[in-house]
Image (tube, rainbow, N blue to C red; front, side, top):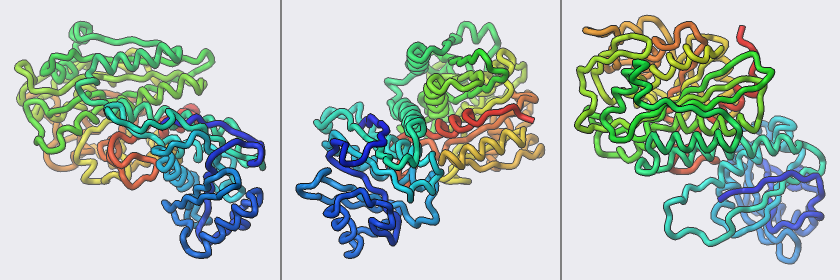
Length: 499
């Protein structure tokens, strides 16, 4: 369900809406929650529901009340938990609960009341949290359903802010963040038969064309001339040619460049080192890093930050075709390193390695962030609650962590001790593409470090956070989460030169 979100400083009595979303903390009533502008009959209904303990205001709780003759005809109460624990993320999650409830409805117009209680969740930014959570929560991937809800294609949402608690820009920015994350979700959810490397390049081109970004793609013929043996090695098992995609945003006054590199394995069977059949269907999500880059570039084009940004996607399929790469093969990377392929299912680091070294050589970015569903070991280590991170630059890592905390796309830094690099030394070449059974997430990141040189760099392993994160109210119960988009938007929004 798509939401058309707008901001209004008019009073409730001046809005033609069918339903009103009211956020309420625990142990509260309409007076304590700042709902004096509601009609007396509506306040009585809410207070009665609280008194009778039909509604308790706890996080994730909700209740729909029919008001009868008074307008709006429906009140949707949503709990925001304890007042003193309210912050941007808890408010965003509460709005996500409301968004999910709206998703299957036949409503056409809904109001959301901002109150002084909500201002404790980031001040003026509370409007951003509400619009963002609503749009994220309402997302539902139904592109392949032959029978879907025949209700309206979208709902008009009015953020009602008579007391100017927030502002229009915050509401618009929240909606943009969510729409861009939802774009990444849709790319991730699209099945492999409709999302091969060529089609992913088409999606990137479409964004660039509509938003005024520069677009470039390197084909396999050009990659061969350049010596991108790692990327080509992964790609050779599929009939769909690999692509190296570039999306470039330039600001005329920018002095720095940030590169965003996303793993784009549109389907990962494991190659000759074939994955188990169970849940292999989920390997369409192995391009969620690239989806995050496309979603972010969509937002960047509309934000117009004073920073040059390069979005880079090495796109390929990892399939066990007759010409597929074999365990034991040795390939030459773009930067000249000889790499032993011990496991063809450790392919993400290979395509990222060539993309990173080429991007750094050609564009000379001041910083690089890569995102990849790189290792199952990260899911074992951190579950679905945080993305793993590895970095060669303390300040950049701190900024990424702060952006993760602010956005809800949390990350956890893993140690980058040099000893872990010893596990990747090759027997016959310079490197091997796996480091053994221990510290798999760290060695995956350490492999990439060979291709970034001294450039400040953060690697985000999103294997555990990219899909099926059920506990976050604004994420779908199944499918892609759009992780990374909002984190990168926050990183870009607060960008300043690194020390």
